[in-house]
Image (cartoon, rainbow, N blue to C red):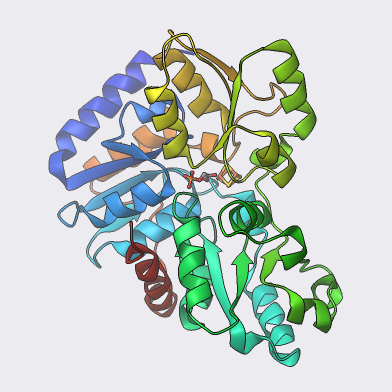
Length: 355
Ligand code: 13P
Ligand code: SF4
């Protein structure tokens, strides 16, 4: 639907009034009505870098979800204020790993005698206190665009290292198997709702990858069957999916990569080529509109928007910007100093990775 012209004018006026004082970041899964006001768009890795690269902006308005705004707060200066236009924009995947659960898992690994060889790595899509846990325990953050280099780094940190990968089992498994040459047997899943994660101490000792039982409620819904159906109905189609999809889906795909990779792949694709994309719907629709010379389909029509990403809409953005013009900072995201310190350590290890 077209954006409300009155709200568009108000957003434009508020941004103009704030000038260089405000910097608006927009994740690729945001609505078009919001993306049009983003100073930069990107995946979570690019946006984390972009936020850190704007030390002069007083206000960072983050059009994305809560964990991204937390990361922006950690990576920006103490005088910069990060604003999330709707505080209800969380992430179901990030919510699947609570610090108390992760600490209980760590204690169990210590009791099993394996914690000394474990390097924790958390996906960006996690709360700041999980990032801090990784920072404190010699680990790092990764995103979907650098998971491979992050795992390479992690396996080099200790002799016979194991990786404890949080919170997305699919990104962990897909990267371990497709990029690191590990096998399904090298991976075990830690279920926080079962005693000892549902694992024996021997299974913990034998594993190379201990995957947290978390997933994305959007990407996790694509099934291998829809890939087969599409190949039957769209001959010549190329299947392009995000690594948050299940391993069985990724195995059947032609290409797999982060949202930035998906965008670059479609931009570079020849006219007339045909694609089915397994990622969030706002991005797929935008790509289809931007490339009318290519046939672009959504991998599964029953999987739709990320509901929490979609909470950031034009009314919320206008409210946040107009409040700033009026001198009030609303919905500030501020990580406490100790969590910030250790999460920054883990984020910096990621930013220091080669590539
Ligand atoms: P990227 O931005 O790292 O591709 O992650 C996708 C996602 O689900 C963000 O919430
Ligand atoms: Fe979280 Fe998935 Fe939504 Fe990304 S797309 S914010 S991982 S629920």
